[in-house]
Length: 121
Image 1 (cartoon, rainbow, N blue to C red):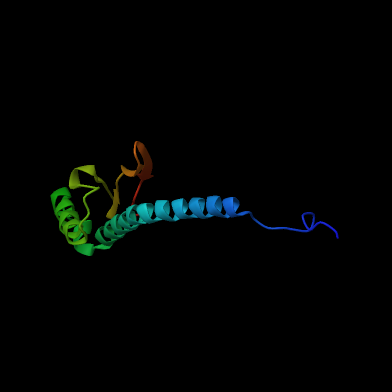
Image 2 (cartoon, rainbow, N blue to C red):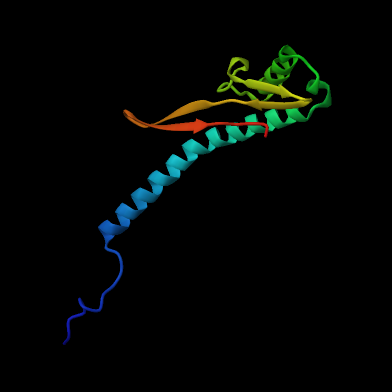
């Protein structure tokens, strides 16, 4: 009889466990990162809404910051405060932007550092 070892193919049990552990780690990492990206998208949406508002086009900086503060309270946004917002008003055009970092603990002393730059343009 011929040996079947030359014909066998596939992943060993240990290989399968390692691949499954790596896949699980990546899924957990993704689940920790998704809320940060969702919040960045919410901040961008707020900036675009404020920049498109006709009454805020001619409003003061204080009015713009108050509008952001109200919308951020509704969406429970804590990463970007009104002090972090950069506001540019040029010839009737309004541009809002911010830059912030989000640190996400992974395990022990290992963390992810995500940098975001939401803008209205």
